[in-house]
Length: 189
Ligand SMILES: [Zn+2]
Image (cartoon, rainbow, N blue to C red; front, side):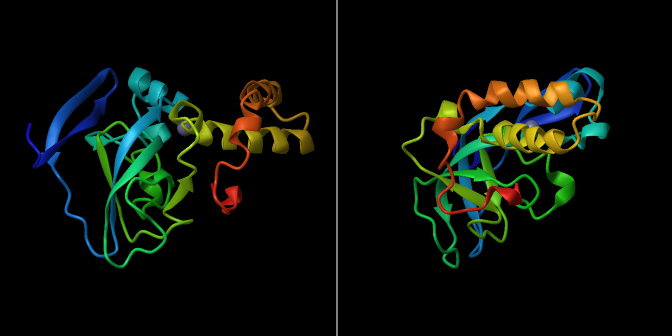
């Protein structure tokens, strides 16, 4: 392993993950390289490890992990609105410009290359003063909040009590997470 490579976690199927060295990505003019600071383990990651990943779009022989908080380490010359060292959340569906890769963004690897990077679309800036351990909750927080809202309008929906319980649990960190995004609308998540 040297600076020409980075460590990547590759999902190989149920019960199998490899850590391999991949070539360090080149940063194109409209691209950004981020270093992952911390990545949450989603229920879908656990399900994939136990039973295989296809149902959760965690594809065999791909990098995976999608609940990342990352730090900007390289910025292409055409990318606007970012500085080195900024903390960001890579958008699941748009960081790689491929909705099929939303669960295989690469959060369990050391680095991610953000393609055709647009701030507020491909990634969201996170206030650097928010502790990483709090910021990493952003994806489950948004899902829990949205699930809670949806279950309020459909109270008899199956799974309602699960969502409500989850919402309450995540709600303990609500005050710290409000204002997490700098001027962006969480509905895009
Ligand atoms: Zn998740």
